[in-house]
Image (cartoon, rainbow, N blue to C red; front, side):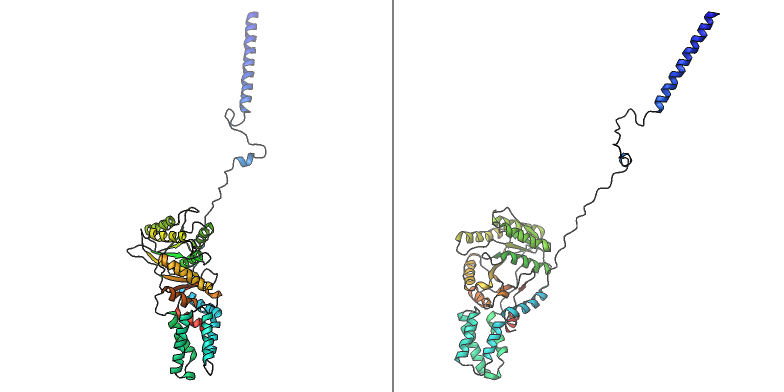
Length: 376
């Protein structure tokens, strides 16, 4: 009886101990944190709420297209050509008209007229020819009954050359681009001229590529790039101090490949007494012509240089066969007669004139507009 009692008590103790173990295990399992048994790292204190939020969307950098300039039209440029020339050159015309309007045109008066023309850099031979024609016409047409202004205007226009072809040859043959080579000495304004010509062409709906062949002057390359960026024109450039001819060649190659209308090539400022540099300019022209004809060679001259400009013009014409003149700084000089001299010296026309520092202060040269501006 006692043995059965001990057995029942033992079974009861084992049952109680087993039940107690099961309850303890259940409580431990229920208190385990979420994710127990994984490598989840709890966020630091204070970041628990934001850690579970979706990350913010990254900021999108939307590249805006650069605002391009709209170059001024040719008609608008010609209006300002007359206005600016009349302000800067008007003294010449007024002086001549005052002398020609005298009651008596004696020898002293004609000598004064001749001096006025020479002071304006028209040159000795053109001055003498003009004075002789004026004397003849005013005498034959009735002296005081003739209109001195009308006679002077007609003779000045004839002197400047109304029949010269002043069109820019900016188109090539056989689908190739026209190639315009721009040359001149340091300080004449070649790089600026190239940029301004590009604006004129863009205003006339031509596609343009610029060749920065002045590789020895980093500032010139950067300046040309700025001109191109403003009107959306591509600029071909090479390493600083690189071969200018290779840059010119690449610009023309790209122009042909892309079907561009005109390639404008800027060159380094050449000193007319540096034979090596002038030979290099000839090389640039020869290299270009392996791909396409050079349709225009523009010589940039500073209108204020007078006789020195003529010396430069002679040397350049011997090297690269100049086809047209660009006169810069014409508005800053009363020596507008340089137009006549340089044309007679080279036998090629002034095609463009620069009239100020603004981006559109360059215009095609027009003989009648020039003379009208001189006369005020």
